[in-house]
Image (tube, rainbow, N blue to C red; front, side):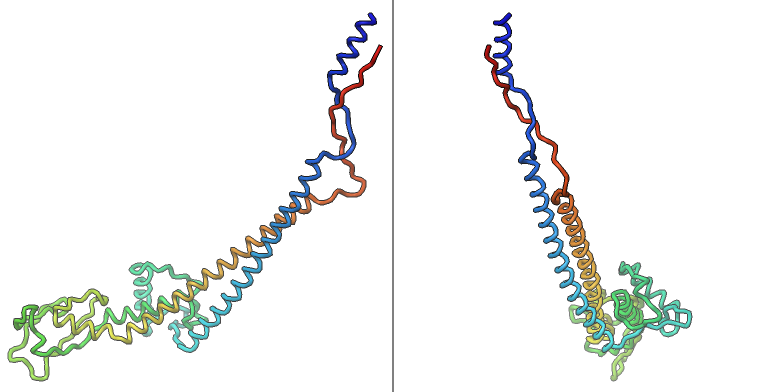
Length: 283
């Protein structure tokens, strides 16, 4: 029996037993430190985003002020009736036709919020586009007197014409030809700059009469206003995005820092089990 007891004691010496030691494990100390470091980095990123949003908002304000000043100097206003409806030369139907051209033919998404009867000054993207459509409508749908000379009434091969296509109708060239020139009424027919046949003497003369340098200048100027107003809306969206990213990073970083913060007074850490061999008993 004595030998058996000694053998069991020796066997137990070779089998480690789990005992406990007070104090946190190393990973329990390192993990909160890492979380606090991540939290600090997120808060720094959040502050950077907030600073960026402030700079972007300042630039947006400068651009908005510039566009407003530009619009006030031009002094172009849309026309509304007493019921707050758009009118063109006093006619609501004509204004509806212009709006239809703008939204259906041109495919521009007009915003009702930018069409304010109480603020008729043209200073928003939708108002600039509507004014551009108004000018274009009157240009392409107007009627223009054009005067043609006899030497201009020839075909591409230089042969004299006996009849001429004027808009949608064919007219006979007068004989004898008037000394002061032949004046005809040309219907714009919704033609844009590229829709004219320059080999046709009537089309060539009508295009110059319809699409003058003044018209091109006005359309280009209104286009600049539209692009500027649209860019300002994009800038405001960028401000909101940067501010949102800043808030998310700040809140997330602060939450991580708080969750991994120092332990409260009196809070203890459960002891960690540590493997330790039992001592060998002799005898």
